[in-house]
Image (cartoon, rainbow, N blue to C red; front, side, top):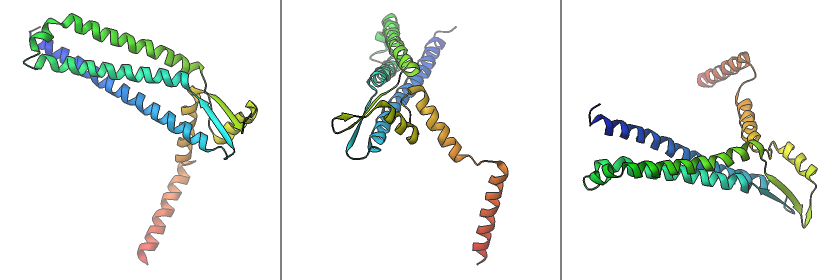
Length: 196
Protein backbone atom coordinates (compact mmCIF):
# COMPACT_ATOMS: atom_id res chain seq x y z
CA UNK A 1 0.00 0.00 0.00
CA UNK A 2 1.42 3.36 -0.94
CA UNK A 3 1.65 6.30 1.41
CA UNK A 4 -0.99 8.24 -0.54
CA UNK A 5 -3.62 5.49 -0.39
CA UNK A 6 -3.64 5.34 3.41
CA UNK A 7 -4.75 8.96 3.91
CA UNK A 8 -7.24 8.59 1.04
CA UNK A 9 -8.79 5.44 2.51
CA UNK A 10 -8.79 7.05 5.98
CA UNK A 11 -10.44 10.16 4.59
CA UNK A 12 -13.01 8.09 2.73
CA UNK A 13 -13.85 6.05 5.83
CA UNK A 14 -14.09 9.15 8.02
CA UNK A 15 -16.29 10.87 5.42
CA UNK A 16 -18.72 7.95 5.27
CA UNK A 17 -18.83 7.85 9.07
CA UNK A 18 -19.41 11.61 9.12
CA UNK A 19 -22.37 11.19 6.75
CA UNK A 20 -23.88 8.53 9.01
CA UNK A 21 -23.39 10.73 12.09
CA UNK A 22 -25.03 13.72 10.36
CA UNK A 23 -28.00 11.59 9.28
CA UNK A 24 -28.33 10.10 12.78
CA UNK A 25 -28.29 13.51 14.44
CA UNK A 26 -30.81 14.84 11.90
CA UNK A 27 -33.14 11.89 12.48
CA UNK A 28 -32.81 12.37 16.23
CA UNK A 29 -33.60 16.08 15.99
CA UNK A 30 -36.58 15.36 13.75
CA UNK A 31 -37.89 12.78 16.24
CA UNK A 32 -37.59 15.26 19.10
CA UNK A 33 -39.49 17.91 17.12
CA UNK A 34 -42.21 15.44 16.08
CA UNK A 35 -42.54 14.28 19.67
CA UNK A 36 -43.20 17.84 20.84
CA UNK A 37 -45.68 18.40 17.99
CA UNK A 38 -47.55 15.18 18.78
CA UNK A 39 -47.79 16.04 22.47
CA UNK A 40 -49.11 19.51 21.61
CA UNK A 41 -51.65 18.04 19.17
CA UNK A 42 -52.90 15.53 21.73
CA UNK A 43 -53.15 18.17 24.45
CA UNK A 44 -55.29 20.33 22.15
CA UNK A 45 -57.79 17.47 21.70
CA UNK A 46 -58.93 17.90 25.29
CA UNK A 47 -61.98 20.15 25.76
CA UNK A 48 -61.28 23.51 27.52
CA UNK A 49 -61.99 22.73 31.18
CA UNK A 50 -59.84 19.59 31.05
CA UNK A 51 -56.05 19.46 31.01
CA UNK A 52 -53.89 16.61 29.71
CA UNK A 53 -50.37 15.96 30.98
CA UNK A 54 -48.11 13.74 28.87
CA UNK A 55 -44.83 12.79 30.50
CA UNK A 56 -42.25 11.31 28.11
CA UNK A 57 -39.19 12.52 29.99
CA UNK A 58 -37.42 9.15 30.12
CA UNK A 59 -37.26 8.53 26.36
CA UNK A 60 -37.12 12.24 25.51
CA UNK A 61 -34.01 12.83 27.63
CA UNK A 62 -32.35 9.68 26.28
CA UNK A 63 -33.16 10.89 22.76
CA UNK A 64 -31.58 14.28 23.45
CA UNK A 65 -28.39 12.61 24.71
CA UNK A 66 -28.24 10.23 21.70
CA UNK A 67 -28.80 13.11 19.28
CA UNK A 68 -26.11 15.16 21.01
CA UNK A 69 -23.68 12.22 20.86
CA UNK A 70 -24.30 11.81 17.12
CA UNK A 71 -23.77 15.53 16.57
CA UNK A 72 -20.58 15.44 18.66
CA UNK A 73 -19.22 12.61 16.51
CA UNK A 74 -20.08 14.57 13.35
CA UNK A 75 -18.20 17.63 14.66
CA UNK A 76 -15.17 15.57 15.70
CA UNK A 77 -15.10 13.84 12.31
CA UNK A 78 -15.29 17.20 10.53
CA UNK A 79 -12.11 18.25 12.30
CA UNK A 80 -10.39 14.92 11.63
CA UNK A 81 -11.24 15.00 7.93
CA UNK A 82 -10.08 18.57 7.34
CA UNK A 83 -6.95 18.64 9.55
CA UNK A 84 -4.61 16.56 7.32
CA UNK A 85 -5.30 18.82 4.33
CA UNK A 86 -4.67 22.20 5.96
CA UNK A 87 -1.01 23.29 5.78
CA UNK A 88 -0.84 24.62 9.34
CA UNK A 89 -2.41 21.47 10.91
CA UNK A 90 -0.99 18.76 8.64
CA UNK A 91 1.97 17.85 10.86
CA UNK A 92 -0.08 18.12 14.05
CA UNK A 93 -2.73 15.77 12.59
CA UNK A 94 -0.05 13.23 11.66
CA UNK A 95 1.50 13.31 15.17
CA UNK A 96 -1.80 12.93 17.04
CA UNK A 97 -3.35 9.93 15.30
CA UNK A 98 -3.49 7.96 18.56
CA UNK A 99 -5.20 10.83 20.40
CA UNK A 100 -7.64 11.23 17.51
CA UNK A 101 -8.57 7.56 17.66
CA UNK A 102 -9.03 7.72 21.44
CA UNK A 103 -11.26 10.80 21.18
CA UNK A 104 -13.37 9.20 18.45
CA UNK A 105 -13.56 5.95 20.42
CA UNK A 106 -14.75 7.76 23.54
CA UNK A 107 -17.39 9.63 21.54
CA UNK A 108 -18.54 6.33 20.07
CA UNK A 109 -18.81 4.81 23.55
CA UNK A 110 -20.81 7.87 24.61
CA UNK A 111 -23.20 7.24 21.70
CA UNK A 112 -23.49 3.54 22.53
CA UNK A 113 -24.07 4.36 26.20
CA UNK A 114 -26.89 6.73 25.29
CA UNK A 115 -28.52 4.42 22.76
CA UNK A 116 -28.82 1.45 25.12
CA UNK A 117 -31.24 3.17 27.54
CA UNK A 118 -33.07 4.76 24.59
CA UNK A 119 -33.71 1.35 23.02
CA UNK A 120 -34.79 -0.09 26.38
CA UNK A 121 -37.24 2.79 26.93
CA UNK A 122 -38.53 2.45 23.37
CA UNK A 123 -39.04 -1.32 23.61
CA UNK A 124 -40.56 -1.47 27.08
CA UNK A 125 -41.77 2.01 27.98
CA UNK A 126 -44.85 4.11 27.58
CA UNK A 127 -45.80 7.70 28.19
CA UNK A 128 -47.36 8.67 31.50
CA UNK A 129 -50.67 10.27 30.51
CA UNK A 130 -52.92 11.97 33.05
CA UNK A 131 -56.05 14.03 32.51
CA UNK A 132 -57.55 16.52 34.93
CA UNK A 133 -60.76 18.48 35.11
CA UNK A 134 -59.92 21.29 37.45
CA UNK A 135 -57.97 19.59 40.22
CA UNK A 136 -59.75 16.24 39.87
CA UNK A 137 -57.80 13.54 38.06
CA UNK A 138 -59.78 11.43 35.61
CA UNK A 139 -59.53 7.64 35.94
CA UNK A 140 -56.97 5.90 33.75
CA UNK A 141 -59.70 3.86 32.04
CA UNK A 142 -61.34 7.06 30.76
CA UNK A 143 -58.00 8.32 29.45
CA UNK A 144 -57.35 5.00 27.68
CA UNK A 145 -60.81 5.13 26.08
CA UNK A 146 -60.09 8.58 24.69
CA UNK A 147 -56.70 7.33 23.43
CA UNK A 148 -58.39 4.48 21.59
CA UNK A 149 -60.95 6.81 20.01
CA UNK A 150 -58.30 9.31 18.88
CA UNK A 151 -56.11 6.61 17.32
CA UNK A 152 -53.16 7.37 19.58
CA UNK A 153 -51.34 5.17 22.04
CA UNK A 154 -49.03 5.74 24.95
CA UNK A 155 -46.79 2.76 24.10
CA UNK A 156 -43.66 4.05 22.34
CA UNK A 157 -42.96 1.13 20.02
CA UNK A 158 -46.53 0.99 18.74
CA UNK A 159 -47.31 4.68 18.32
CA UNK A 160 -45.39 5.39 15.09
CA UNK A 161 -46.17 2.00 13.56
CA UNK A 162 -49.88 2.42 14.20
CA UNK A 163 -49.98 5.98 12.83
CA UNK A 164 -48.02 4.97 9.72
CA UNK A 165 -50.31 1.98 9.12
CA UNK A 166 -53.37 4.24 9.30
CA UNK A 167 -51.79 6.70 6.86
CA UNK A 168 -50.92 3.92 4.39
CA UNK A 169 -54.38 2.34 4.49
CA UNK A 170 -56.00 5.71 3.90
CA UNK A 171 -53.82 6.31 0.83
CA UNK A 172 -54.09 2.88 -0.80
CA UNK A 173 -57.15 2.03 -2.89
CA UNK A 174 -59.12 -0.98 -1.67
CA UNK A 175 -58.57 -2.99 -4.86
CA UNK A 176 -56.75 -2.55 -8.17
CA UNK A 177 -59.96 -2.74 -10.17
CA UNK A 178 -61.49 0.12 -8.20
CA UNK A 179 -58.36 2.18 -8.71
CA UNK A 180 -58.45 1.65 -12.47
CA UNK A 181 -62.20 2.40 -12.49
CA UNK A 182 -61.57 5.65 -10.59
CA UNK A 183 -58.86 6.59 -13.08
CA UNK A 184 -61.20 5.83 -16.02
CA UNK A 185 -63.96 7.93 -14.44
CA UNK A 186 -61.54 10.82 -13.95
CA UNK A 187 -60.32 10.57 -17.54
CA UNK A 188 -63.86 10.44 -18.92
CA UNK A 189 -64.89 13.44 -16.80
CA UNK A 190 -61.87 15.37 -18.05
CA UNK A 191 -62.75 14.48 -21.65
CA UNK A 192 -66.34 15.67 -21.10
CA UNK A 193 -65.19 18.97 -19.58
CA UNK A 194 -62.69 19.57 -22.39
CA UNK A 195 -65.35 18.86 -25.02
CA UNK A 196 -67.65 21.52 -23.59
